[in-house]
Length: 130
Image (cartoon, rainbow, N blue to C red; front, side, top):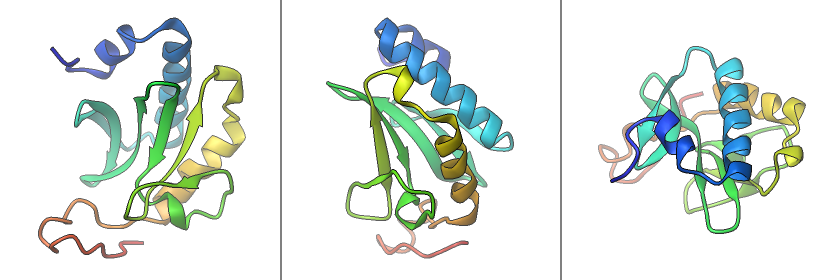
């Protein structure tokens, strides 16, 4: 059975991955206090006005932090991922997370948003919100 809460998701991770996720969650909650955090497609994701902004997931070799609109951010350090506007960072150790860089990404995530919430209505075409 898939974890139904972020706490349950963290609880089933290996200690090193859990430490990464705990730090990411604390930083995201601090940087986006108005965001709604929930499990979405079996992973922790934060939303602003129903639009997915940031989330993370456990991959085989790392924890992936993904920003849905990250390709448009000014702060460096994210890599393009997928076919839309997303960008990611991958971590294998909690010491790799730079809080200042992460906060810059979170700041950019408010300023640069594509409308993923309505992607089905627009038949896969993304529209810029901010």
